[in-house]
Image 1: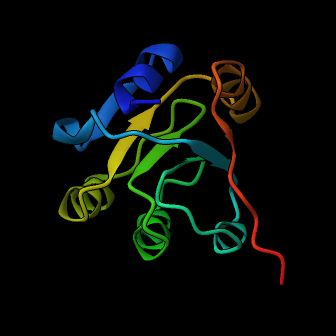
Image 2 (image 1 turned 90 degrees about the vertical axis):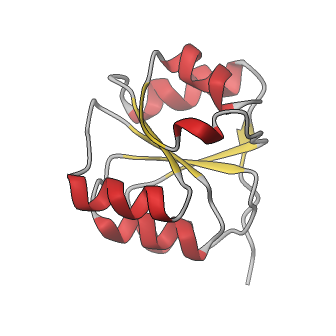
Length: 118
């Protein structure tokens, strides 16, 4: 699914990475604990989170995640958005809660990320 389609489905506002909206994602992962995000690896995954701090961008960069949707209408500060731009990470915000956001994307065919079992 292209990020453009996700934006429309979620009625999301694009905050950074406008030029990368044609990227494809195949999976989604919803978490507010960045340590949970470290449990999987897939560069075709979109991260759904309510955390808007720079640690979220650093985690996405480290895990090769190139798209983040901030739920509940949350928006990161300018420093965090600048970090996302520098790392070519698309960020969006949606007014939906995480559960609804996940459900909308699941209903349209996006699946959960694969967890690495250790």
